[in-house]
Image (cartoon, rainbow, N blue to C red; front, side, top):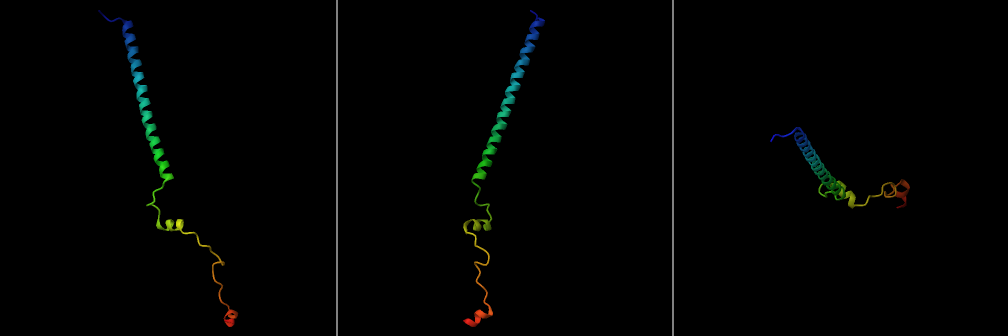
Length: 89
């Protein structure tokens, strides 16, 4: 038996619908994969900010973080001796 025009049109529409469904499925899979990669990158970046590696800190910065800052100014310096101070000694 020969295939009628209607049968060919229906078969063509069904094939187009299958292709459309497959294209949407591929697009969803690609989007999901891109999302997974983005979330993994975001997670790794967040962990790096929360817990920075200790080996990359320069020595000077480590010392500053451990030792308290020394006060500066005239309060920490001993007064210079003047000529009157020397006479009294």
